[in-house]
Length: 294
Image (spheres, rainbow, N blue to C red):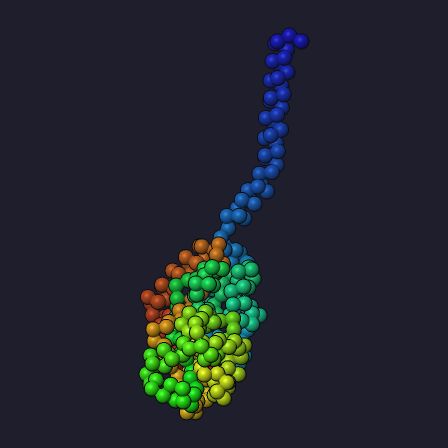
């Protein structure tokens, strides 16, 4: 075969190859384009597409952050925030209330079972290794409840809150804390010599402080104030010590990869903080007691 014939055959094969490549690419381009578009969707896009904001929340009511009213409706600071966020996004809201510890709320979110977590969540450094947190929307104070009789017997000179706190960091001193909460880490950090006793039930922990099985407990001021409201005689047996310099900042959690959703939530919080609606919501539930009779 001479050289001109070889060149002719080569040109034919080259043209055929180009045509087949074009056909294959054309046939596959719609699927490829759809896959690329799907991969480019943000969590905000997914939420709007499904028409629902899925919120994970602790299974028990924790007034006034989330609880059921007399009509059976879910109310409180966190449900109202979630409902307002969903409204601003133009979608419905649904609540997943299966987690039985606050750490389990984080686990559910991390595994993709929800879009966000609004559940009286402390934005601790340990939790921030698993999820991202928004700016805080409320700040609580850590609080101690101390058995008055044991305090008088063991540390009669401890009168002020600071003096009491110093005495708590001693070996063998039992301090109760709710398992699966940020307060386990708070207790270890501030009272490393004390003996932490983990509880799943706040009522039982209170009872053990009253009976003297515990010297004290550590929890947020909200739970302690709720208990004191329902049991006004508690002050006769237990001393409430507010830790003003120990803040418990509460924030919304999102998955680590949902950067756009996190940015949107921070902008949302900034706007409701600036227009005063966040402050009004917090005051409605934290500074007033009308919600208790609704």
